[in-house]
Length: 422
Image (cartoon, rainbow, N blue to C red):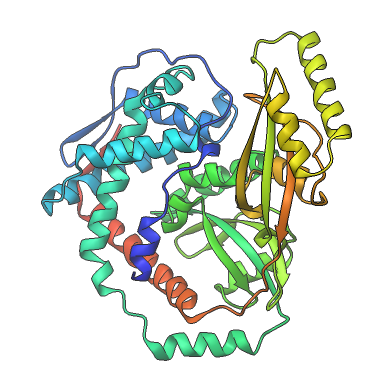
């Protein structure tokens, strides 16, 4: 599989992008915000997308935040119009089955029943069509990129060998696991507004908004589909502005907005290691769980009683066989085998609960939406780290080239379009 194909095959969404605080349903809004090659973007389109972004990224719904986000939302909608128009020009269509597949993926990731996405969104005051329009545009643009740009991606063996040799010589150099948000500046006059938006996002990210969800909603880079993930980065592997910003960051840190030609980056360091060493996030654990169901409307007395039961289980049960048996015999709960999972792939609160557990030791009770969960680690495997392979290098270089060319393609579409904003 080519590097571009791998990039475009990645999942578009994650659970964090949907589970967030709710807001009241928006009033119906009329009017026209923009016309793109004679196609209208209505005020209601902007309002619905704005609310989707606010909820998905867990941003406060107030006048100040709306004022900061609205230009970016409108810009994204204009880009989507251009992308879908270009797909039509190239006779590229999005089949209903592709939309349904994306919908099923979202339901699976969010533990929703088949066909439950619409009800889930409506319970949060969102129209399903708002999200489906975004998904359709992403699928269409992905097909455009595969047709028009992917065949032109050319990463030579000599370039790969040069990077591989440099990485081999740097064993022991610090590496960081990095995610990014890229905010484009189309004209010099927009720079101040985009920087203020970047500062607002940095503040929300540092206050706990999930980085991957914010990246999916706001980033204009190719990595937005994967929550901004750009992988393990060594010193000197990124442009100078970004490399300098990373130098002062530790695991868990969010950078200040970093200005580069054409826009701003926000960087997030998820982990760090020395080249050639294993990352703690690559450890795989075999997990079992006991779940004690609990209604979100349960009384505080019921919650405390169930927590007391969960703590008693944690103190009494030792070993995975006993854990299984206890779960089967528990009248108010159920047990299950979650299989082998990579620590870096589980939510932060679960990772914190199980990261230091000995094999056969139960976790502290975790209060979740669906109830109270007790976890037990039944095996732990720490893989030996290996230097970056040539295939990984080729994919990263291909992704960088693909992103640059896709950005240029969209910029040219904007330049040649008739766009009127009101």
